Amino acid sequence: MGNLIAFINAFLSYGALFLFIVVLCVIAAFVGIKLRKNKNQREAALSEAGNSNS
Image (tube, rainbow, N blue to C red; front, side, top):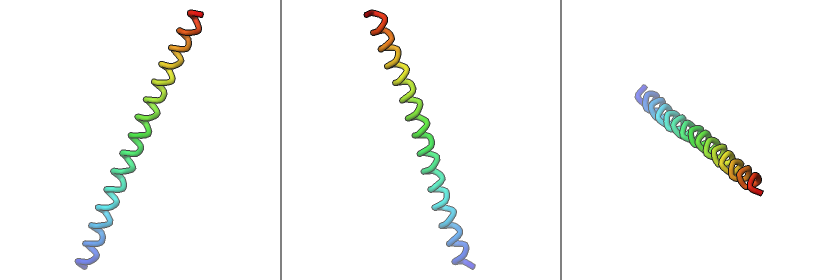
């Protein structure tokens, strides 16, 4: 019985670690998407400003 409890404890520990890593990856993906969209908007605004001056 003690071995089963130790196995379940280790399994849940690694499961929690896995979920933590997945959550970090999802957050990083959303931050990357947001940063890229902001960069695209800034570049579009600069190119529009450059085109209107010509």
